[in-house]
Image (tube, rainbow, N blue to C red; front, side, top):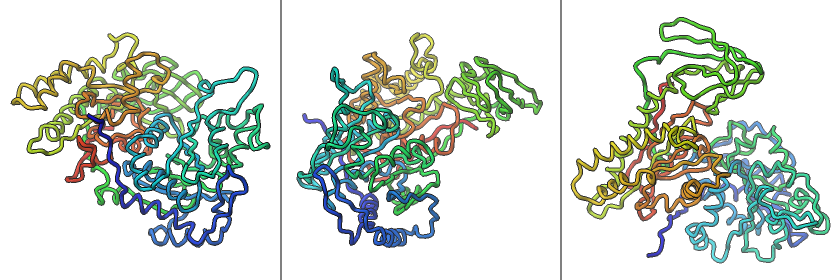
Length: 563
């Protein structure tokens, strides 16, 4: 039997976003290429473009928005789309349309992190998306050129050659208009010496001996995913501008209110009203004691931090702590990892800044609360699994999945398995709930699935953490590949894995349409961080045939502590 694939649709809001971009270039005649390796220029006639932008903004109800960013050297367009509404699909369709309408065929896709990079590559190269766009744009195809870190670049003895991906991207000529060349690069590599500074023994176009010079020659169009990671006042943005792009298009759910030319906006309310995302049901977890306790950072130096501690009864105490000290007995395993002027970094990755006067409730980190959250999340998961998996009458099944954000990696994955307290508790609780469900069920396919799960508990869950990228462990590599790179297998009804653990590595860029439960066991982050976490499960789910399940409203159940 051939493997089933996700089914992509060109949805109305995605088409509207792409059409908004095309309308910016209405009545524009691209200048012809001077060289075979470069893009035609779209942005010479600035007066016409400015007029078109004004019309597009007015048509999309955005003419009253005050933009606060301007760059005279490059045209920047902003596309705001709520997480889970298909930004990756939209920027891919943008490339096909700009190629078909204007002959542009060299794009640089800029992404911030490894998971986002992996997700973009998977989408652009997957058989499902290739077939979908081949149907929409007959004869056209995308060629991906992936910039790897320096350790992955092969060296030729005695010569310093251009990174292969960059060289292939640059030197591909434009005679084959139907071939779209996409250079995929992440934040780290943009700022690297390899791209910005290194001089190579060979030259490209007889003039360029650095990557930055070569890239600037092709007049690239740059697409940016997650624009809040590339603020205009930081080094990365300046290095992107060094590429001398003729056009930058930014796609994101989060811009931190820094817009250039916002020409399309699909906010959370519009997305929900158009049945494009799940609704959200928030489950707030509380304890009977300690709810009012508060520890506030007052000051920090490189040697010590001073905290104000307000107890449950209202009494106050000052805490003077150093590197390695635990803040509170309830915060088991969480200590001060690093101290500097005005800043404290905890061992769970949470950063406290003196200027913000941040407060934490120590009991929100307690194992008692976390165990309660895990148990309640599992009960909710199996309530949904029974609804979507135990169906009859030919109704397509849906495989629910759950995502856990955790504080301490070592509590889930440790060199000493006996110290994996979170994993041990999770598997124990999972087995108890499976036993309970199996006992109550008549014979049915879902019961068989639960029995298999009980007998293979370790196959039911997996994790992805940043350190996994350097792991040589075969089992970890297998988990990583399934979670990061093989969404279709992960979504398969017959694949038992449906519980995913991460610290914050999967906070952005990674998503799965069948995430129905998110349990936030790690410390609270910024507003943007919270939005990014919720976004991992906002997509409309797909059924066992990989079609979007749009026949009813679906909800994402978000478990958070009382803080």
